[in-house]
Structures are given as C-alpha cells and as structure tokens.
Amino acid sequence: MRLPRFKNLSLATLTAIVIATMLLLSVGMAYVGVNRYSAYLDDTINSNLPPEAAAAYKALTEGDVPDGAGVKILVEHLNAQDAQTDLQIQLAALVCGLLSALVCAIIGIYLARRIARPLEDLTVAAEALKSGDFSARVAVSTSNTQEVSSLVETFNALATSLDTMEKRLRFNNMAIAHELRTPLTILQGALQGMIDGVFPMERKIISDLLLQVEGLGRIVEDLRTLSLAIGHKLVMQRQPLDVAQVVEAVVAAARPMLEERTFEIETALKPAMILADPSRVRQAVLALLNNASRYAESGHWLRCETESLPDDSVVIRVLDRGPGFPEDMDAVAVNPFWRGDPSRSRATGGTGLGLSVVQAIATAHGGHLEFSNRPEGGAMVVIHLRPEG
Image 1 (cartoon, rainbow, N blue to C red):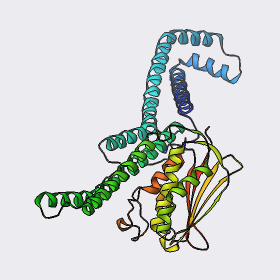
Image 2: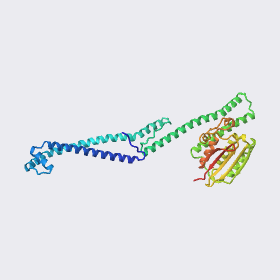
Image 3: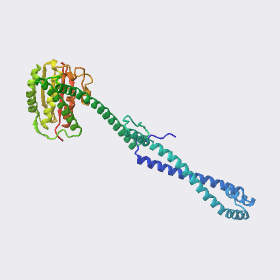
C-alpha cells in the first residue's frame, strides 16, 4: 500500500482524515455485511415456506390477490421465525462490526507506522548525534506531513551546523597548537640556554624573546576577541563617533610603521557618524593596516577611505596594490588562521586571526566584511557598520 503525499497537510488534518476514513470504512463494512446476511436469511426463510405460504408470498410479490388461507399460513410461519431471525441479525451485526473494526485497526496501525516512521528515523539519528556522529542525517520524504518535514529539515540543518562547528573546532585547536608551538619552543630553548650558560644574558637576546612574548599576547588577545564575539559580548560601549576621525588617528599612529616599509599612504576620509564602540573600530582598522603591511608590501601603496551611505550605515575601505586575494577568498570570512597562499605564512608575522577578528567586530556592529580584488591590481577590504537597532 502506497502512502499518499501529505507534505501540504498538517499532522492534525491528516489525523482527522485517517480517523474519519476509518470510521466510514468500519460503518460501511458493517452495513454491507448485515445487509448481505439479511438477504441470505430472507432467501433461506422463503425457500423453507410451506407450499400454501409460498404460493401466497409469490402472489403478493407479483401483485396478485393471494389465497386467504395461504396468507394466514404465511403470517403464522413468519411470526414463528421472528425471534430466531432477530437473534441471527443481531449476531451478524456484532460479528460484522467486530470484523470491520479489526480490519480498520490493522489498516490504521499500518498508516500510523508509516506516518511515524520519520520520527523513528529522527530518534535513531539523534542517538547517533548524541554519540558524536555529526554526519547523521534524516532522509527527506515527500510523504511527510508539514510538521514532520519541518522537523526533519531543522534537524538536518542543526546536524550540519554541529558538523561544521566540530570540524572548525578541531581545525582551530590544531592551528592554535601550531601557532603557539614555535614561540614557546624559542622561549623555552633560549631561557634554558641562558640557565645552562650556553647563551649570554644580553639585551639583544632578551629583546628578541620579548617579541615572541608579544606575539603570544597578540594571539591570546585575538582568541579572546573571537570568543567574546561568539558569546555576543564583543561590543559593550556604543557611543556617537565620527569613524573618519577614528581612522585618521589609527593611520597617524601606524604611519611610522607603514613608512618604514616604504608605503605611500593616501586617505579620503569623509565624515561618517554612527553609534559604535570606538575601541573595537580602532582594533579593526589597525588589524587591516597590519594585514596590508604584511601582505601588500610589494605594492608600496595604501589608501584608507570612509563614507556614510544613504541607509545611515558606514563603510571603511582599505585598498592596496599587493598580490590581492586568491580565488577561494570567501573562506576568509569563516575560517580563523586562514592564509590564502604560501606567502601568507608565519614568515610574514601573521597568525591568520586578523581578518576573522575584523569580521567579528563588523558583525557585532550589525554589519559585515567584504573582500574583492581591484581591477587595476591589489585588494580591497571593506568594513560595513550599521546603526544600532
């Protein structure tokens, strides 16, 4: 038996249809059974009539006038059969009712199991998910009801999200271990060498070790920022500010570092008022400047722009003439520790967390981060900030 497609029906509607169908089927089967048995009894009684009564019955059915004596015998015979016939009809009604109820119960159980089968599949998949198998999915069927279809789709979406998070967590743990291993190894080796007398305690060596500590501090701070973003606690103090002034101050502070790397710096800072967290905006702009100084040094050019859009949102653009982004640059938005090509490695001094932190800050302000390659060469990163509410 093929179950009809119920995707456009709610579970309540489907249940009502099944119950009504079973009731009608049960009553119909009982009615047909009793009628057929009654016809059988009539035929039996008529075949057993005395000759005079049979002649009178035949005359009545054909519209003729029967013999009075025959009619009397017919009535007496029928009266004698009434009690037994009534009992037989009652028993027939009971038996037909029980049989129809049994048949309808079997059909109802079959339909109920077909309807509930997706829930059993969901239970099995949920148990697999509970045991750590995040690849568990439930097949989507066109015969499911609205509620079951919605539940299956939601479960599959949740399982996919958990699978993605688990893979990302595993990758991040390995990446964190990789990022921390090198500076910790350098620190441990140098300090042990000083203790053993292999290395002298010179200012230059201590200065180099301090740089490693500062690198560890940056990693820890970036991880803290991402953790706050996940908990929706990243932006704590929104206040009116002109983003142009914030960017101008950050560029002025970073100018010595950029000029030391022979960057030509341009700005086009239009007034852009918005409610935002100034410390987080400064952190995002500085991260972009650091990113550009590492990966776009070959272009020797950097431009910062700010602008207020008609929908009251604000954009911050950082443009360069470096190698640009690779084809898979969409991965930047979701993967911490991302580096697009071999040149974006530890040798440049980056951890791969910078752009993830910037994206987290933009998202916390209701905006987003955009990446694109400029037609004339180089990359452009745009921070979109939206007003609160």
